[in-house]
Length: 86
Image (tube, rainbow, N blue to C red; front, side, top):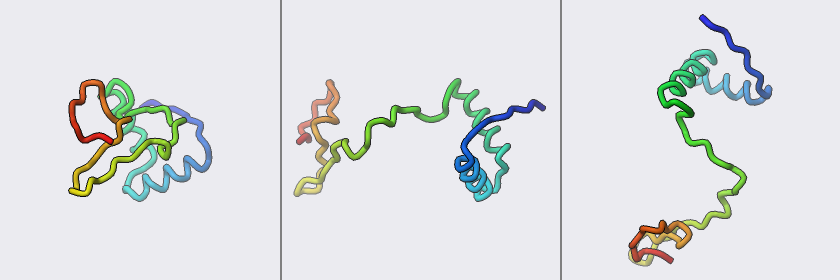
């Protein structure tokens, strides 16, 4: 069995341990799950995004008077032909 030492902030480790315990898992078990998924996905098993853009600046969809969802034009893809845009 191999051993790996990691460095992280105290608060991150505290929160990690609390969540692992709430799930009934040890911290080591959680790290092993992550490592196995990392191998299976050949990378992160989740999206890694630039978080410098605040979500508050992203326009939200709204409902029409008829209950249809209307998405802002900023969400439109180049190949989108829908008429349901602001």
